[in-house]
Amino acid sequence: MNPREALLGQQEERLLEVQLACPDITRVCDLARAFIDLVRNCRGAFVLAWTARRSWTLADR
Image (cartoon, rainbow, N blue to C red):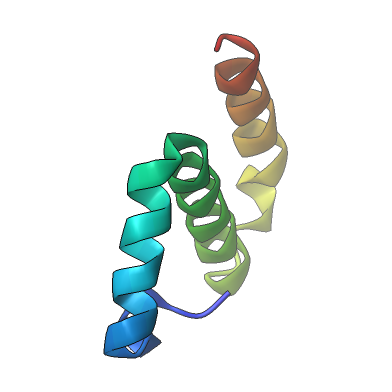
């Protein structure tokens, strides 16, 4: 997944269109970005807690 700031103008516009059309896509992007942040910043110890919290949040929908 590319960082949002690495997207070209047309790519960023298209992502916004898709996110507006499907709020679930927005949620998935947010989850992916949060997970990538955990991995990139070596916070592996938090992965299990993060996964449990996200699973609970998604099941609530």
